[in-house]
Length: 537
Ligand code: N01
Image 1 (spheres, rainbow, N blue to C red):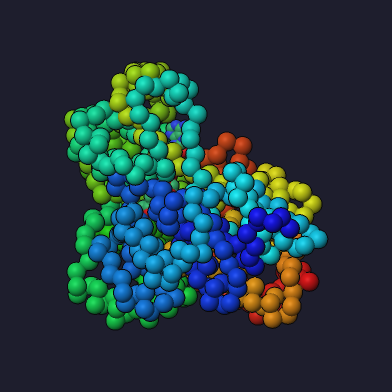
Image 2: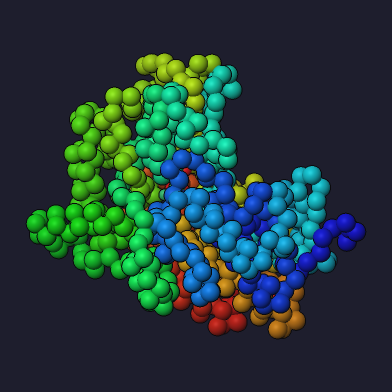
């Protein structure tokens, strides 16, 4: 063991929802735990994504921890869908309240992780040489935390400013874009949020869209005292819903099939759901739109109709209407006035499907059709989701094999929390976890509880090594594939859920689509069965 290596029993990587809760649970269970975080503070994805308009698409009352009544009682959400700043402040509050800060080393991005079979320990190091050694490593590195910078030829010659939503500088607010000519590249959730947030201020706004996405209107509003009191009174029920619903949220949906309704009933129910602005939960308002193509087409048509009636120029409206995937097969977006922006004279859509290849010049962006002189280019171009943050670490198991190489032909794991060949490593929201398809905070709480329970199980038995078996991992891969087959995800041509947004990444579903409730039951069964599927010694 090197003398200047910090030693601990468990090293946690990440200070987002997962890392903070992992440190708390591990410490409470009596483990000697240390933690590292690449950013300068807590928040994870909510630390980095500070772009104008960034906010959560799951209701605040669901998008928070439930493990502590005291935390619930001390924190009041101000808005129904929290802004990035409010979620980040919530996580700072949790870290302060539970005194988690001292466990963390900030500004420490782990560059290498190596398992030593003899000592059964992981050695972790930053690029600047800081080192940790731990029996176990819990990665809570986030599913959407490895930003993708697109290869736009000539971008390095652009003389204006390039900003990326996923690494937005702390000191750039919407007012700093006032009067400037701005190009936004990307029309996923981040692009759809940033556009209406800056449209009022900028002199000209060009939105470069490669594929249209379904976006559902959410009218943001504050929570009043009555709603907060109701939330406090219904806390136990809301908590229970995390265990009993597919999505891990309290919103029950209509319980109605999209197919069985008459046209009048259908229009009525859809309008009601639209006006209620459920956010991401809009997708589960009907029982069958997530799995049945006919039901799905009915919902997709409803949203297409909304786009067409909102955008006054019919040609622009048609370009914004998605036709290449079922609604929900790609992550839907939530917006507050995105489509309305295209009715303004200084906002224009550039459809890259017809405009040709995107290039940059010193003065702006260029397609085969036209030149766009701009002062700022905003890249809202997404993430190497789920596997990216782990694959970017030079992470090697006992044989020297790198995790990135192991996943080159497709990511695979046991329950999304362990990978065969990489002992004593536990991945919160790893590939094959339900996290990105459900209320991710609910999934994170489950994963952390399950992982810490597993470590306690090992400790009780005096065991120091645990590794998922290849058979168990294969079984879980089959569960992930089978669950996907029952949903509309199998009809998506491209989606970050499938990894197709990253050049060279194999097309494979990155999440378990069978629901958080079912996942919990399967994981609990495995735990009850002495952690079936792990070899321990
Ligand atoms: O990323 P995305 P995101 N040239 O991958 C386009 C969560 N999130 O950051 O679709 C031109 O969805 C790309 O085009 P295409 C949420 O889970 C949540 O927006 O690949 N365009 C696409 O339009 C979300 O799903 C919230 O053809 C290029 C866009 O960039 C996830 O994060 C808010 C391009 C990327 O969209 C990711 O969202 C924000 C290129 N070279 C994010 N490369 C909320 O909670 C890519 N694109 C509300």
